[in-house]
Length: 198
Image (tube, rainbow, N blue to C red; front, side, top):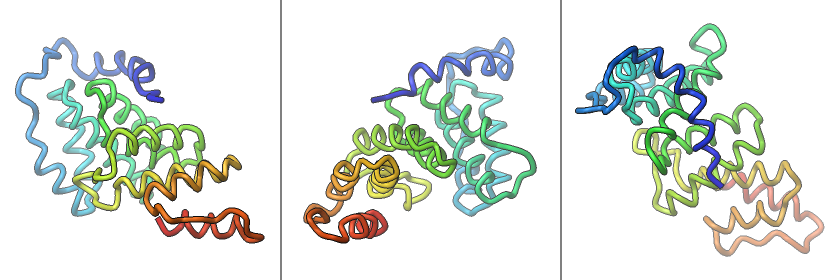
């Protein structure tokens, strides 16, 4: 269930403001190696500034928008930036999703960010989209801890919160095929341990 298509349309007015009258065809994309280096090194403020500069000069670059989302999300989680970055994070990821069909890196970012915010259904839907589309070999190239396994963990945890225990167990079994938890007096504790082990 890909929910990104319609939400991406909401950010076009802001895109127009950022881009002015520039050409949206994209041309050659921006060079993002240094921005991703800043992100990987943990300098999320510098990474955010570099990605913001990239989207201002290349507003059709889905990767620049995705990088801006990841950098802002990391800044938000670290508390290293004054103010509320939530809308900026969501706008960046949604714009990346709008510009590039099937953009699993942006979906993974949305899954993790919504999960951190406690947005159960949004986290679940984005995690499922990313896990299914990315497949078992998926790894976000700029943060190896974001991968198929972590997406299944987000999905399982949010299903557990909804009381959909059988489906949560199914998510664990995507990664650990022999996992069993049912028909035991401590089944929910075993299920939680299984989710935690992902």
